[in-house]
Image (cartoon, rainbow, N blue to C red):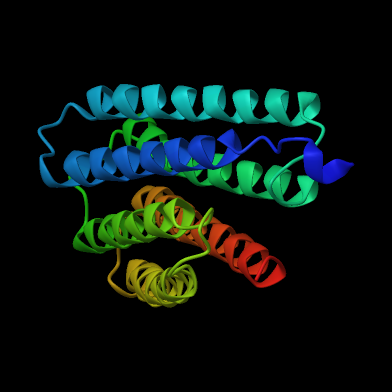
Length: 205
């Protein structure tokens, strides 16, 4: 009987929409770092718009999940992936918020490198999530996201160590330590997305 009931496949469209919103946010973060002109609040406000769009997509998915009888993948996986994608966007916005609120005068080279890692991770998330419905070429993108998370770990660790080695102003140390940790956590959440996508792919092949 259940085979005669159509499954709601639109979840994959929402996942792809959320992933592309993350990518747009990551591009905006890189632009905020590279084209820094002292107006950090403008960049933050742009990131806020992407974060609000991510929240909107999350609510749409959860609402559809609550109204759908037959789902294309396990309900728990849909919920976990939705939350993980939302977390990535939240943290990208949080980086911009901290830079603006702390009135950062000039992004560091390490911050620019971490922003690039977040962007590359976002690109891989789009590829992995877009291929999830067909379960085609998912694993290679998940592996790459995991590798990028390790790269971010190394950059963040070295950046924080340098803060304490070079006699920086204590307030700058506090500010940048939090920014670096937020950026590294963003890549952690990207890895969470990859792990969920990988688990879904393995479960459904």
